[in-house]
Length: 606
Image 1: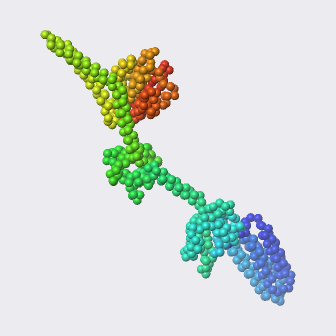
Image 2: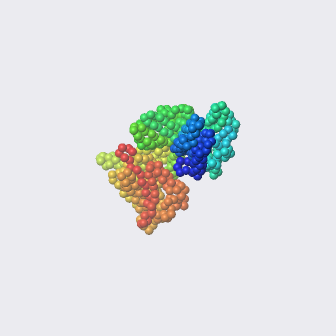
Image 3: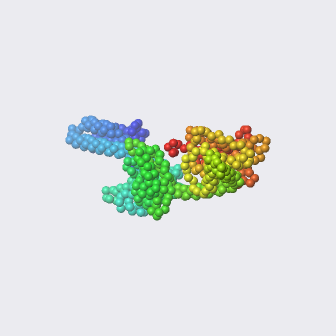
């Protein structure tokens, strides 16, 4: 079976030659039949004329040739009629006409069958599949256009060739096993590795069907094939990507999750199963996540679940998991709304195991708190003389006032009013002494940060008051420029006071060498944005070098000969932990300006 069929359209040179031979033969038969005394059925040879014309593939021409040959037979009979043998001539004429008619009809039927077969083959050529027929010796007997496109060999080049040698076929299993299955079941399908004519390797999905002849003997194999090279490469790339993703999720401890509503269908990656502590055979549900949630965080997770059902565009929640073995995991769930159509919601997100990071952060915070405590103790040690004087001064005043009160009371005529004033002064000095001790004890106390509402103006006044003696001893004039109304911030009072004390002490030490101008210290507060307040500590010292500004807050960097370089670094850590930022500037008129910006406490507590 091949693709060689009569062409549609202008006659080819071979068809024209056949038509010419048929015409010459028809003329010769007519002359012999009409002009010679031969008493045989010469007109029967017209069937050859009909067959020659039929080879051209045209049913119309074949019918015309058959009719013409019948007419010529009848004309020849009329011209050569012999009265003495009229019965024999008539019989030969009828026989010839019958032969021509039957031959013409058979030729027409054969041409109709050939046309249908040709249409079927043309339909096979319309498909992109490679369709190849080969005999039991693997020799190609049919090769459609799809095969030409897939393998690069034309039908003329492939005909009679061994299909497997031509395409350099590599089988997934021994070919003998494939042949055995084909003979047993009549079918086989699988993937083959083949080579194009240009040397390009192909991955082929092939389906074979065995055709048997009328006696049941295997005669040919019909193979339908598709080029799945790109799909195979894409699948391989997808497999690699999935493997990389799974490994990346395992290394980063990040699992992927998906949720479809209202069906409540969930999908977890393998890493999400591992984080939540479930076997991969478990069908994931929201209840499974709630089952693992720490009881203290259950309300938080349920609130996030309610937001998801309400169609919130993004969910970001950190909570804890209580595992069956009693261990606690810290996780961070982030999801976003991927699609929202016709009441159907689909969320995709990531579940991150942040246990190690959280524990590390907690350890770091403990270390920072410890270091801040040590720094406070060190600062208090450096201010011990000033603090002792500040405490001793109100105590001495109390003693003096007590003596005065006793004298007023022991007079022959006790002066109750003067004694009362002395006692009130004693109470005032005692409260001052108690407040100083309270602040010192608070700074010296070792404890975890406690966040509450803090009046920044009051904190500034207290810090400057605590260091009043230190400022007096260094001849420094302190000026407060506090914005009203006072800005409330949320933070740890002790840590924020540590920042203020450290900045003021640094300013005092920076003005030690100033003799040519007055030593001044400015502490000011002001709102810089609707939700931020700025605290500035400025001195009239010598300032710092231009290149030092960006390093002042680095650990162990110091401009002092005996400094450790940790004070400002701790200040920055405390400020950043409170959601703020700190930086240094060198004003044009000299000195240094340390500025702290902190978020303002909202009325709703946020």
